[in-house]
Amino acid sequence: EPEVTQTPSHQVTQMGQEVILRCVPISNHLYFYWYRQILGQKVEFLVSFYNNEISEKSEIFDDQFSVERPDGSNFTLKIRSTKLEDSAMYFCASSDAPGGPDTDTQYFGPGTRLTVL
Amino acid sequence: AQKVTQAQTEISVVEKEDVTLDCVYETRDTTYYLFWYKQPPSGELVFLIRRNSFDEQNEISGRYSWNFQKSTSSFNFTITASQVVDSAVYFCALGYSNSGYALNFGKGTSLLVTP
Image (tube, rainbow over all chains, first blue to last red; front, side, top):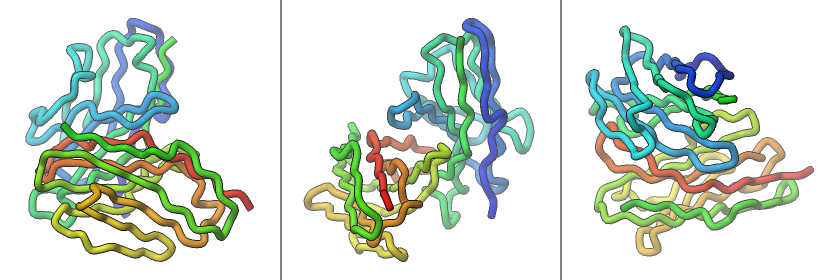
């Protein structure tokens, strides 16, 4: 069964460093998302991406964050200068093209745990 | 504005008991989707169900059932004959019906099923 994959599973970085979190969405999906979950808290939306553009973003997704689809399979989240409060689990998700059977269902990857020291 | 409330923070049951997880939502949209996701101790988010706002038919899938009531803005989830493997955090989420929308999650209910 197709699934969303994410690498690395755990990333440790020093405050102020740049990190890139990588995701491979389900192959025929066209909508991509990033969410984060601070330990013990709810899952929060960061950004959605379609047709090489950001569709929607939350207040959390400030200028420190950027997303990119560098090739036909990867979807990345970059944090330019990490802060302690960026420590969280970051989930990538994808959903089907319009008209597809699962157009409105977001399937999540296993997450990348980011620890900022 | 959209809001999802899962009032039960933690529930503990003994195996084989039935358990209902509550979800109440707020939205001004007439068309929307409701979801349940499961987050086991391993941390991933597993999709369980999606329900369109126009479809109030209840759904049963094995030991799982969902009760959607628009009149009370609730979308409750019942596990029948719970098992230890059901132990997880369960999230209710709300989204618009357009593709590429943000999902708005509740705070989750942590379910512990003991033998």
